[in-house]
Image 1 (cartoon, rainbow, N blue to C red):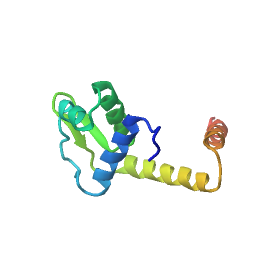
Image 2: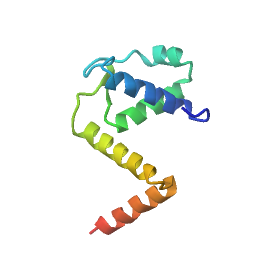
Image 3: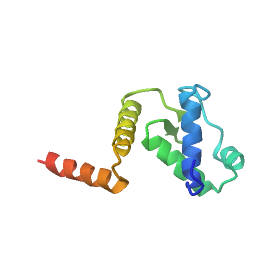
Length: 113
């Protein structure tokens, strides 16, 4: 991983790999925020950014007052994985990040009623 990768993305990648490798299983509760902050040696805000990103990816869900859990596999996860694979394929075709974003924006504008 690049040295200039934001720490929250490092945490996202580590937790995602633990889920993909079966170390963290669907329905399993994650350690508390305090424990995770200690494990990754980060501030709470950094950890919250990582958790938020993992929730957006469909990998985690939070139950208010109960904790954060690995989400059961479903539509959200496969959709994100498909999008991720598409971006990797486009990057493999030597498209820049800006070109990929521009193309996605153009497609979205075309799809609007």
